[in-house]
Length: 225
Image (cartoon, rainbow, N blue to C red; front, side):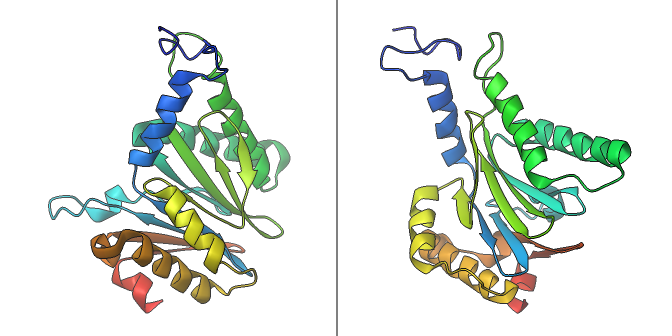
């Protein structure tokens, strides 16, 4: 009793309960899928909200960090915004200091370090957001950070609603060496299978990161692609 009152306190079983509560917040967020292809990385996000009063572009969760890095989040969007701004500053500082494009993993590591700090120090709660970073330095890359500040590199991954269900489908269907078009087709198939009757392609936003180029698609544009 009382072990969940601070993110700095371990429960007797070795768990940090505030961190575990924050992880549940991620699964309440809308789903996103990332996929590494032969010469591209694809990130597709479900906007979930479909409201004629909202300007759709303002609800797009796929954000450009640098000309070769994009990111998407699941969980508390306002928490993600703070981390995205930090990632952009880090990328620009690297360009100013070294006159070169920042390494994708170095940006991911810095953001993961910030998230880890908020599981260790008092007076603040953990960031309630998981973030997926797609980058293209010498090759296409996909990283995901979790609440605790861990990060891993993936061939394909999902965050947000029904993430385990989506990942199980990806484990069965994903193959290395897909073209960008084949990868997009696979992602749509996975969304259809996972969401069933709730699937609506008009709610999807996609970012295709190729070397030196970011292409944004949404709704019917994804289907045509």
